[in-house]
Length: 108
Image 1 (tube, rainbow, N blue to C red):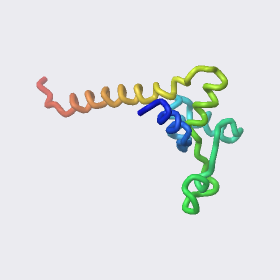
Image 2 (spheres, rainbow, N blue to C red; image 1 turned 45 degrees about the horizontal axis):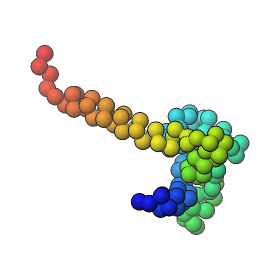
Image 3 (cartoon, rainbow, N blue to C red; image 1 turned 60 degrees about the horizontal axis):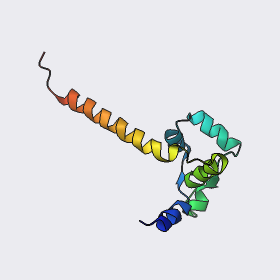
Image 4 (tube, one colour; image 1 turned 30 degrees about the vertical axis):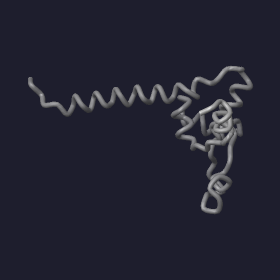
């Protein structure tokens, strides 16, 4: 992908729920809910994203817009933009090793 294509891709809002936002940022779900209540996050309703089939009461957080807000405030990319994937992959590899070990027969 070219830089122009990547920039256009990041302009598309990526709506995520509060649980995914908490997972990506490392914040507690309670803290994220408080931020939503105080309108400190870029929010849309499910209906705005999905159309008539979505709920008008359930909020989704616009991930890309949040990353842009952090960048504008700090002039630095938020680590959550790239670190959460790396951390998730490391955790999944550790879990895979644990499950592989637990599946082996005990020789003791």
